[in-house]
Amino acid sequence: MMEKMIFGRYVPADSVIHKMDPRSKLIIIFFFVCVIFLANNGVTYALIGIYTFLMLGFSKIPIRFLYGGLKPIIWLVLFTFILQLFFTKGGSLIFHWGPVKIYEEGLKMGIFISLRFFFLILMTSLLTLTTTPIEITDGLETLLNPLKKVRFPVHEMALMMSISLRFIPTLMQETDKIMKAQIARGVEFASGPLKERIKAVIPLLIPLFVSSFKRAEELAVAMEARGYRGGEGRTKYRQLSWAAADTVQIVLLVVLTILLVLLRS
Amino acid sequence: MDISLKSVEYRYQANTPFERLAISDVSIDIPSGTYLALIGHTGSGKSTVLQHLNALLQPTEGTVLIGSQEIKAHQKNKNLKAVRQKVGIVFQFPEHQLFEETVEKDIIFGPMNFGVSESEAKRRARVALKQVGLGEEILEKSPFDLSGGQMRRVAIAGVLAMGPDVIVLDEPTAGLDPRGRKEIMDMFYSLHKERGLSTILVTHSMEDAARYADQIVIMQQGRVAKKGTPEEIFSETAELIQMGLDVPEVVRFQLKLEEKLGSKLDKIYLSIEELSAAVSERLKRGVRS
Image 1 (cartoon, one colour):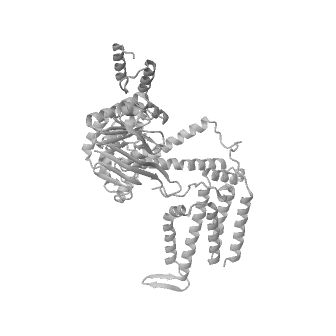
Image 2: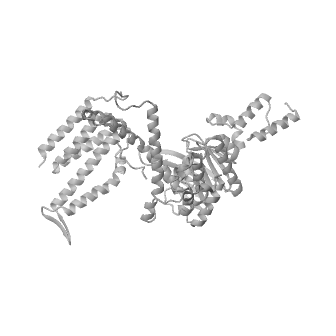
Image 3: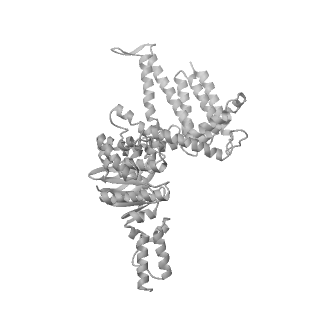
């Protein structure tokens, strides 16, 4: 059931996007999320679309796989579309049936907002699909380093992040295992009345909590036994390196931004 | 209850870049009342086979027959609950599945899910607890206050109380001390003998397979590499060693002895008692050639 999830999953491949420095990818995603709000007409949305699909193409992630993973999100996008469609008023009335009224502005907003949503999801998935969790945390730690001056615990945050990312697969595996053990004991997770199904979660959650706490304790002991003393003076095994391709990507985004500013209405 | 796997194939995460063939063309017959050991290295597909035995996984090709219920690839299968009551699985580290406030509640959880009345379930809990060698005084304790070994026994009791006809054991003694191992394995063996429970043991341990099983299936890289009785399997030791598998200590001793004597005993012996009897017999006769 969780087999098709693509969030937070890394798909190894040999592509330009995979090889980029995690710092540049993070910066690009951060700015992309802001820049996407500049788009407000057909041309600008088309530009963003071209940019997104260009990046997808570079990443060599199989489209079929992306499609399978994004299917559940399509519903969310559709829901946003319908909400906008029915509840935005303005422009001329294009459809009228009983109490249902659809305005030109509603259709436009519906399409634009769901497109924005869709592109955002594509780009952020692209980050996690092409960057290992360790790279992301490394990148984030370096980017946030200046915050150390104001005593923000950057290293600790990064460590927490990498630990939680590291244990997602473990937790998934364990969930799967305990679920199967309880199914074998007659629990039905997927069928039956809602009330029963909610009750069925208890035999799953309690063992998961118990083992997570146990694991956290063991991990802490193991780290201390290996002399972990926090981030002070700690060196890195993986060195981040900023290449020409990263600069090119940043420039590309800047060009996109300028075009958006010029072409928006 | 007979179980039979017919050319079963299973792929994890089919149709994604992560697709992985776990087992292919696996055919195993497990007639009622058999004690079958499933042996193989980590990643040989043992656990995947195991999960087909009570329909936790549906084959991507082939058919699994559990009693009269047929589970086929490419179709929705119904009424799996009945199958699951009849086939109890003791997973690796079964203590991880405990969750209730008291030992009693945890043991009756399985039976009650299958529609057994509370009073009957409680009666079964007491019987099962005795079978796994624990006293009734722990019924009211929290399972999380018990020792690791006790927790494992409670979890096993929870499966036994369901009243299965077939019991599937996935490395039931992993992480136990030698005494605990022997106690648990002997317990399952006596259940098998007394109640005629079909038993399927998934294990790394050749010793256990040789001692308890009457059928052995060796898995390698997702396929059945060899099957037969322990005598058949262990009479071809060279092949086992080539597959990187262990040979039981008794068999190894017999082989060394035969090498020293320069002659063979009449057959392969699988327990120290039988072997020593055979050797002393031989010594009495004084036959050396």
